Image (cartoon, rainbow, N blue to C red; front, side, top):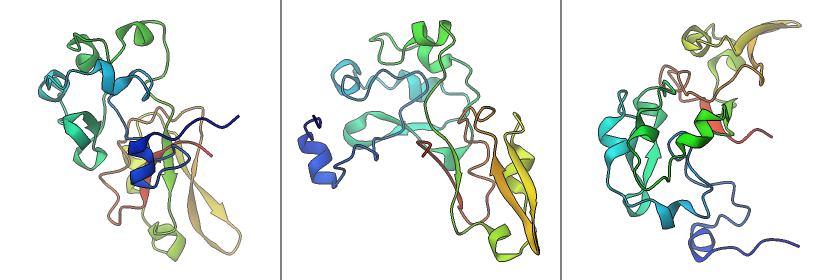
Length: 166
């Protein structure tokens, strides 16, 4: 049975739920997040890289165009209502279920040598692989990608997105 579409998702045209905002690391389920988050701004104020910004309704979202997430736990440590779960982090759960994705705008797909995304990837999840008769293209090792977003801002054409894996 399909789940009901909320009014907000309906008005945004998001019938599948695939456009859910990217909340700070270790956020509780989106269905409960708006009820529990008090919009106090502590996570935004405390984020050392400044990537947590106010989103729709003042709720915190992550903006990787501003930098990367260090997965430092500062935001969860200062979330008194518990919308960011320090318990999930302590159990070793991943910060989120999103990973890097390369769009068609990637310069390497046009034969331009660019590896800015891989240069910033601390986990070495992005690797450029040779293609028969063409340029090296980016590939992702999903098991290594933690969704930190370090690859997003350095891309000169905005071809890297952090989103749900296919």
